[in-house]
Structure formats: C-alpha cells, structure tokens
Image: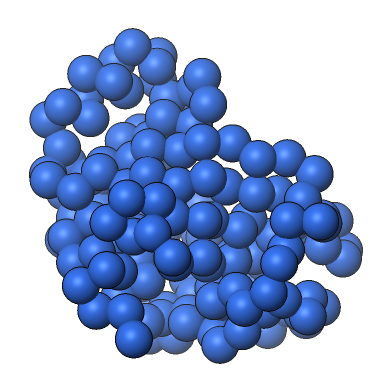
Length: 158
C-alpha cells in the first residue's frame, strides 16, 4: 500500500495568479474515524473511492489506497455518506522538483478556509515555500477534511 506524505499550510495571500488548473470537488465520508477514513470524491467528471489509515506521529505520513469509480456510483455513494459533504475548488500550482501545490478553497460551511498541500517523497524532503503560504498546519486534526465535514471551519474560525 502506498504511503502518502504531505505537508499542509494555510494560505494568506492571492495564489490564483500562479494556478494552471482548477477543478470542483465534492467529497463525503462513509467512515471518518481517524484510524480509517473511507472517502467518496467527485472531482470534475471523475469518481474516486479512497481509504486512508491513521497519520503517523508527525501528521505528515499515512497509508492511502485509491481507485477510480464511475461518477454515477460516486454520486449514489455520496448519498450514503455521513453528514457534512465537503465542497471546494482545487487549484494546481507548479512547484520545484516536479512537485505541485494543491490549494483548496473551501465553500459552504467551510467558506473562508484556504489550505495548500504538497506531496513529498519523504518527510525530510526540502521544498520551496511560496510567499502566499502562512502557518503550517500539518498534523493539526482540525484541518483534515474528515474533521471539517463534522466540525466546519465556520464553527471555530478565529
């Protein structure tokens, strides 16, 4: 099973000038317990089923398994999900070393929250930080999408 290693940051300034692509995402959780999240996602015209394990101590690494499913199945499975469907727009921004930033601008109950993630080969991998990055929130469970589906940003933002 593949290991997902990602670092997560809040966004403070306009990042959209650097975006090369954007796509709408709707996702829900069949299981949102930290030990095993089971996510259904519609990303544009594609459907996905993803299972993630619990994060390691740093919060940056966890097991991940994902497969494509027909979007019609994803739409039906979203109806079975726990309450709190995540609605967001994802912007893709090229980074150094062939990496990319995925910047999620949340809508609905999470409106006002913008989070940037970068996937890495190791937790120690160096990467450039764009000027629009703010505080790192890697490992802060409030910013996990599964947590945002239950405890939306609007209920706890500063």
